[in-house]
Length: 454
Ligand SMILES: Cc1cc2nc3c(=O)[nH]c(=O)nc-3n(C[C@H](O)[C@H](O)[C@H](O)COP(=O)(O)OP(=O)(O)OC[C@H]3O[C@@H](n4cnc5c(N)ncnc54)[C@H](O)[C@@H]3O)c2cc1C
Image (tube, rainbow, N blue to C red):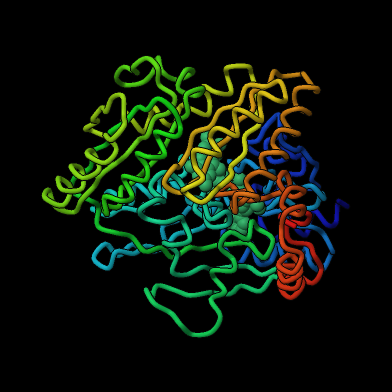
């Protein structure tokens, strides 16, 4: 960028808010070595919504692309500035704007970390249920932009279910409020829903109004170990049939279990091919006890062993280690995030291993069984281009299989730039065109996070 242009950006965000020597960390995301890396003209770090609006307006006037960036924990290259221009980071916007514990609601700057949102709720006897895995690094604005999920989305829904209002800077630089703190709002199109999951392609989210819930009084978890994915599917369906909504219903396949068994807070029995992690909660002791009893009985059908975990935190901490441990097995992994109807869960778990083997790779999966959402991983060694190509071919085949099963190429991580080709291949052309029309209406210059999603 020319010196005069940089001076104008500096005038908006101040000396500290402009990085012209762009650190590499702003040019990639958590996909890392299997992701994309790009270049940018500058990074701007505004301190308030007015600065965001001024930067976006300036970029529109100067026809420069803008890439909104939260915590950079995305796994699809969504926050990577693939067309250069300006990276707009929200990290200096972390304020609590308002917290009303008695009305179960809060409003925060979009740059507040997910972990801080969860802590603020907890300290006030409440809970913000969405729990994506990188909560200490990700931002609430990034969670809204990707409509992030997590284990507790099974009972409580993904991030978007908790958003009552958004403050957004549109690609023109105009600052608007969509929704607010009302719990119901049927006036006009629900444009905040359009922003949720739009991956930074329709505007920059600067503020988020959230509803919260009184924290459950009691929680406990159990792990049921089964001989194979089919038996696990039966346990899963029995949990549904019990009529009790588990707080979480996650799974881990046999290959992943081999890698993480040594750190399990208990002992994994021999001959296990799949595990189901179930959490029961309740707002009264009685409600919890009833839920726990029904779930334990149902997942016990056909299980080799059922372990109870009270307290639950060590089990979920173990769960959080899977991604790192699986990547460490060979040095790298190519991970996908497919979703299928729940009755096709076991078929898909088996398909991951079978497809990987046909491409000469080790494949495994874990994830949110209750939502039919699998984190399917293909293990590869760093520096082996051929293995990466085979993993990419395996992933492409898996996407095809998932679509045949009426599934989706992404359950929670989004499309970004990495999954774009797969999404374009499988999406209905009429639906793609409708999305392009929406994009053109809101971002006629096509400058807001270009080349993402479709
Ligand atoms: C270890 C690990 C575990 C994970 N576990 C989960 C999980 O359980 N569930 C899950 O859903 N995801 C998970 N993820 C993926 C990731 O954490 C989520 O996608 C998260 O919501 C991204 O938030 P972020 O703030 O880091 O966004 P970024 O990575 O910075 O950006 C992601 C996308 O959102 C856009 N964006 C970010 N902030 C804004 C904003 N303020 N306004 C407009 N657009 C914006 C970006 O342009 C980009 O397209 C995990 C990632 C890691 C590394």
